[in-house]
Structure formats: structure tokens, C-alpha cells
Image 1 (cartoon, rainbow, N blue to C red):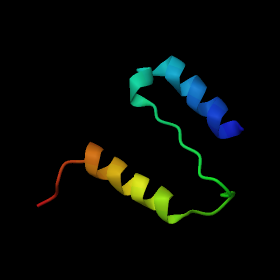
Image 2 (cartoon, one colour):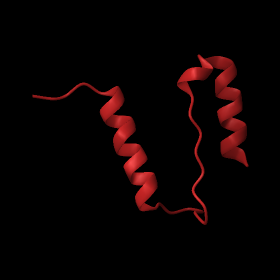
Image 3 (cartoon, rainbow, N blue to C red):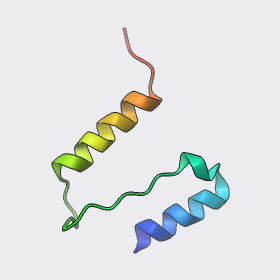
Length: 51
């Protein structure tokens, strides 16, 4: 609940096209493989290669 509210508020502060909110079924205060893959893609998309 708070995550979706935060995402909606963030969309009023920055370009809404730059805000993506995802939920993962059955997840509470842990992570799952799909979430880790999404984080990896997010980092690769936004950070330049090092080296």
C-alpha cells in the first residue's frame, strides 16, 4: 500500500514516465528472483559501464 502511494506521489514530483512501480506476488520483506532481475536491468539501464 505505501509503495503504491509513494510511487503516485513521486509521479507528481518528477516526470511520470520515469517512475515504474512493480509488485511481486507473495513478497513481503524479502526478495525474489524476478525482483533481482528487474533491479539488475534498472542498474544496467541507468548507470554507464565502468572500465
